[in-house]
Length: 394
Ligand SMILES: Nc1nc2c(ncn2[C@@H]2O[C@H](COP(=O)(O)OP(=O)(O)OP(=O)(O)O)[C@@H](O)[C@H]2O)c(=O)[nH]1
Ligand SMILES: [Mg+2]
Image 1 (cartoon, rainbow, N blue to C red):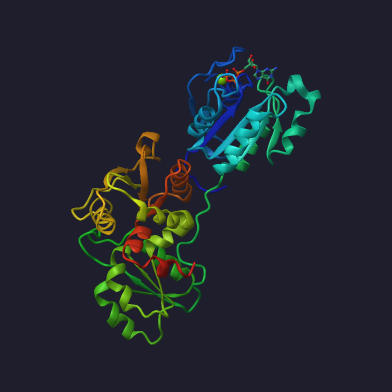
Image 2: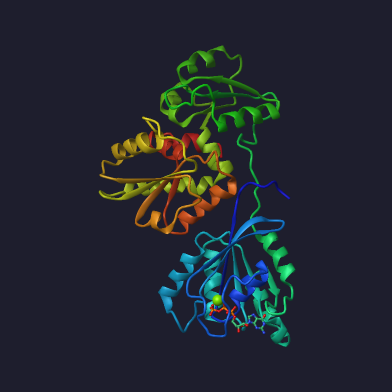
């Protein structure tokens, strides 16, 4: 089991009215948190229950109102479901009949939104003979017979939840191709935006990982880049720079030396480099009045020349020539729907204080709403015309 990371999993229960969603939530949490009745449409608003689910850790279980053919139609139904699911780490579809249009639709939404899911075939106490499970095996890998009422298989369902939830798998920051004997040149500018007397998290992590590989870390500021390169007997295998110095040093690093940024490495280790770089495609199509959301993982005190609040917005406006509207959120667990309303692009920090799962959830909750996302390093490199070079080795 991985160590506790402060990550709270989000488990969303869906299913037709009366399939027993609320009963199942109550059975899993072993408390009556959600009202149960045989009236279809008992749950009218999502019910949130936070708890510790051993051995997973803290979870929020979300009981949703039943969505089905009677109450809602077509697009509205899909919209409702998507709204309920966009933050989900996993989904549980509760069923008590053979699969129909509704179940197929929910499963296709899970697939489209890339949400791992469980199909809980409920009311097993009553419907054992119908072999409903067989029908659902074709629709998903994780199918389980349960009875919320008689508490059949509830512990097995909990085990399945544990197995299906994405675990924290922190990836290395330093690229795998850095090996014993390699020299890595780290460019760390000490300017107004550097914290007093310190070097920041990704830089410390990089140094430690380079040492772990028995490789060599050489460190300088952007102002000393040329003389540092000159002093080295052998060329460094790669230069890793703070994103904010990329435009100052890019033309000083010979083309045969790999060059990337800490932020690109964070995009790769913490997030999803493909999603975070695909996001730049929207920049050319931005129009006057378009809204851009800048998101930060921690609540640091904004600096006078803050990268997220001042510099990036300025560069983006210069590049596009458009009158863009910026909003900022910091330190929240993930964006709320309100924060994402009408947003054309999300620009996220590197996420050095977030775990990989936290960062992935933020990326997914944005892209599941159809909004592109980039991180600081990706957009800085793009706006300065060097994105292709700094990602070319991956
Ligand atoms: N026999 C049997 N009945 C069950 C089981 N689970 C739930 N029920 C019954 O099914 C009915 C609906 O249960 P709920 O938990 O309210 O269902 P729901 O899916 O939350 O319904 P809505 O909130 O209306 O969408 C109730 O009468 C429950 O007692 C089960 O495992 N076996
Ligand atoms: Mg209910």
